Image 1: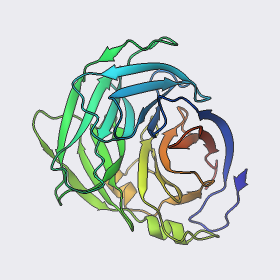
Image 2 (image 1 turned 30 degrees about the vertical axis):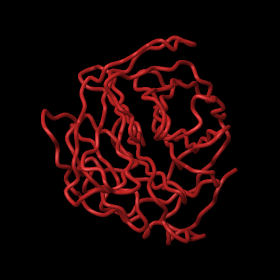
Image 3 (image 1 turned 90 degrees about the vertical axis):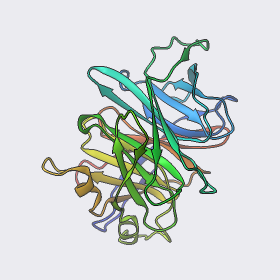
Image 4 (image 1 turned 180 degrees about the horizontal axis):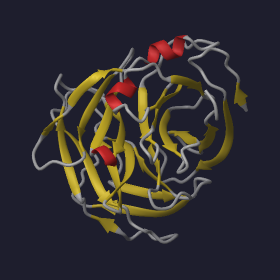
Length: 286
């Protein structure tokens, strides 16, 4: 299927079924990312109420291996990011969900990416480091995390009705980090210029950067929002602009988004049994 939109704030996106996640151990798919060392492998995790585990998936959504984490509570895991630092691949899990907005401290758990063998379920990792985070404006529900290792930054986006707040924080710190509020994203402006406008922009449930950290994608309940950073820009400047809105097929509960390794497309999925993996080709020109 494909979507053809004529307005300048929306893009043509070709969407095709790629597979499905149909494994009883992964029924609440909440985070998805392409491996920083193997473009044919995803890493995924469940939502709250599940063990602290990561799952390696192939491109069709089949579970290759399950990896446990020690010293990680998995209170409400919501997103996963991947990055390479000093030649080493890492995965970062955002324990940041807060539907009731009462948590005083959020966590980002960073692990060295393992190299699991197909069918291996006995591997257990310890965190390489854990970033303890407080928000400057009180408790917020956060379900979106991205990493830009070249600039030593994590970025998080609030899940809320209306245009959400963007937060920046360091990749690593010894002490508690107070995230820096870095503006409000203009998702509503992008949504409403589409040829078939959204009723609303949707709540942000995932964020991912491409490997060069020149593109960013946000997933909401209404579709995807695509940002591109010019060479002279930092991300705060890039996020201040109006993104390109990419409508998507309706998913039961869209929670997971992952850039392809080549940055030319992305995969989205949702919670629930037999969650579809949908591949979306980014437009070559826009």
